[in-house]
Amino acid sequence: MESAAVLASIATGVLTAVVAIVAFWFSRHTQRYAAQRAIGDLQSSLVHYRAQYPEITKYSRSWTTADFIRLYDDDEENATAVRYYGYVDLGLEFCNTALAASRQHHINPKVFEAHYRPLLRYFLAENYPFVESTLNGPYLSSFIRTELQMAKNEGWDWALRHEDLTAGVVRP
Image (cartoon, rainbow, N blue to C red; front, top):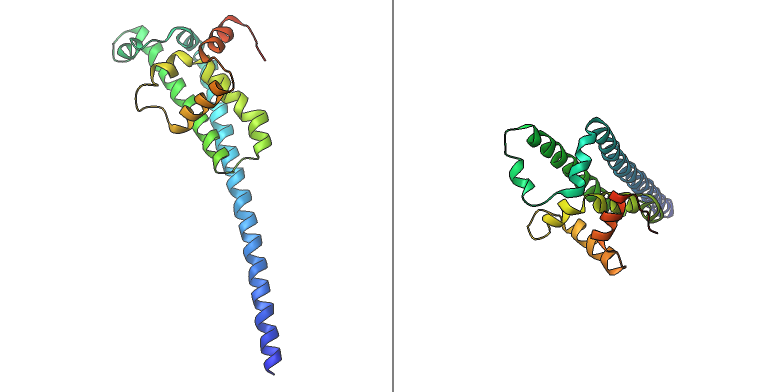
């Protein structure tokens, strides 16, 4: 009788462990799906935003710290500056979400390196005048600051990458 109770106890323990492992696997899978969905939604929003307001690209070429003042002016130029600011805000959220998901292992590292990192570096390079104008303040996340520095350590010149993109030059 005692051996039956011991066997039942062991079986219950094993079954509990199996259920816990399956629950963990499903939870991890759900986290990965949610992270990739959030990143994909942000990327889609960026594409739609840019298609809706193509005039914002002029700001990606020439943004300066003086343009922050334009955000608060009341004229048509203000509207374009505000749209660009909104676009960059959305893009930085895309970058932060992708980088955070990568650091939390919610994205397969190969997928991140092959797909998301090139996209976020493209965005950061294209909008580097804005990004650069915020480097000295507290407004960029540590995720983005780390990515900028890591790329720089790999030999990236962000200002040159920006110039190349806005001139139609593609470098490996």
